[in-house]
Amino acid sequence: MAEFELRIETDTRQKVARLKLSHADGTHLGSNDIRLPEHSSALWEGLFDTRRYVERYAGMMIFDEQTEPATARMLLERLGLFLGEQVLGAGIVRALAGPGRRVLVVRLPTTDQDLLAAAFARVPWEIARLTDGTRPHNLVVRAVTADTAQGDVEITAAARAVAAGETLRVLAVFAEAPGARPLAMRREREELRRLFADQILPHRNVEIDLLCHGVTRKRLEEAILSCDGYHIVHWSGHGHHNALELLGEPNNRITGESLVELITEAGGFIPQVFFLSACHSGALLQVQDWQSLQQALEREERPPGAAADATPKAAAEPTEIKQLDDAIENPSGYTGTALALLKTGVSQVVAMRYAVGDEYARQLAVAFYSRLLADRKARSTGEALAMARTDVEKETEQTAYHAVDHATPLMFGQPGVLLDPARHRSRQMERLRPRF
Image (tube, rainbow, N blue to C red; front, side, top):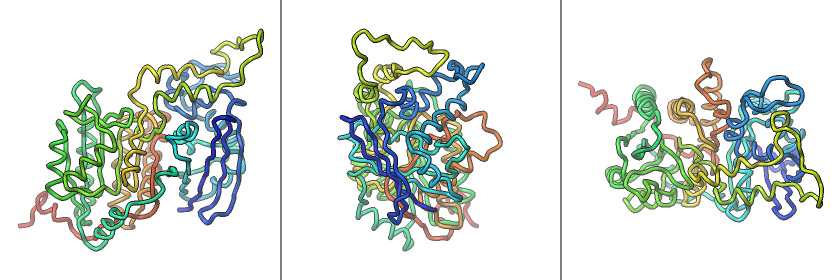
């Protein structure tokens, strides 16, 4: 896959973002400077919290050239035009719009020191388009921050052991705390189990363990002790601010750092790959930051006596982002889980920018592991994610998906093929389908 790097430099005081695109070999391909207050703060909210924006305004907003309220897809297309024409600029979009699958490495400053950088990590770069229809196809985003750019030596050693014949071990956790909104975990669990049993275990040196029905710290520790750790952890459940639901913890939540600490203290090694099938697991912006971000996006103060914009909300795009008040009142959902995992030494994390529908999350997970472990060719995590997104988008039945679902998954961390298990029948098949 062709790889490009988008370097983002932000200046909160000047309210400016500078975007520079280069090829993997360092060749400069395009750049664009954008002053945030010169554009509608509602459009910025749309890029920084796309799903919330689309859900709020679908069926309510009427643009100048329309007579009917905008649909979710129309809102997404309008955001894509803003992202392509104004934020990235035509030169960058055209460079990304070539044939074949492409990886866009979004390189950000240290996000806990830069509010705008944390916000730009949420942007769905995949939806960018120009007015002439030019847009990137088969683009997968891999985010890297300045403080998570290096891999871990122990992880590299574990990957070499897998390549040399060690069994690749996968732990699939289906965690749901009491009283939480029900998720379609049973279908996801059964489809993953079927995929591994039918397409992966008969041909690859892989084993999978599944934890469900009340996952606690003790059950996790027991699983890790039984096999000395896992190379891949698939986590399906609800997300909160840098936390995943785990029964028995304070508020039934465990942070990314605490989860990796639990794994290593139980005698396991740091997993190479996490797949977080949890809402907002790829968001870096904290809830308390939204108010500061709003100030960074607002236009300069009006002079005394100046009239406020009286344009009716239903006839034009709103110019303020009062919707973000909801995020402050509802802290669940804005999480830094993916970034926390990277800081502990995890090499690669697949996560969700926003809330994600159960149906889409299930289909994406099945397609991802099919591409990562069932395909004859060894796939990198980024390549497997790119192909999985395309597989789900090509399905003829799309009514079960939200318009923003396809722009929700992204990858964090290191490039390359980390895990390539030996191509022979798994020992686990003897338990599933013994030979007599």
